[in-house]
Image (tube, rainbow, N blue to C red; front, side, top):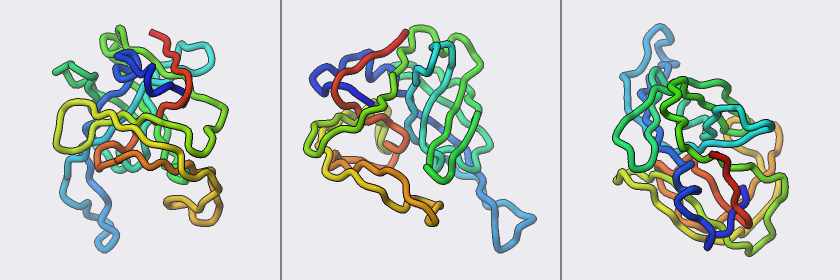
Length: 186
């Protein structure tokens, strides 16, 4: 994503939502029984794609993997909305969610994804909902490495990875990393 840290305003942080997932992972030792249901939280953000008519939230796959129920909540709002998974890419740890309730999308800005890579030492801003709080957390760091790495569950091939030194805590997963110029569509 591209956004200048000094240009990060309420539009940028308003595109970021908190994800609540009730998960029940399979029990591989006893495959006919699922493990006990557990709660998981993470972060997602609204993305603009092609003509902008989409209603997509981008997050990490591990945030919603094995979820029985997924809810999302906008910044500063008390209401949670039911979300559903449109697709999951386990190899790149990404998932796209949507919310069918039109009220959720009212006044929600969407972030443009960048096709350009940042440079080493470029300043970035990370927005997310780390565990232990209900408010969005904004941290700043720099790009410290860009290379191909074996990633997550897909150890057989390498994917592009950008390493940053911003403080990332559990619950931040799925949140955006802004760099350069930010633009959103309401």
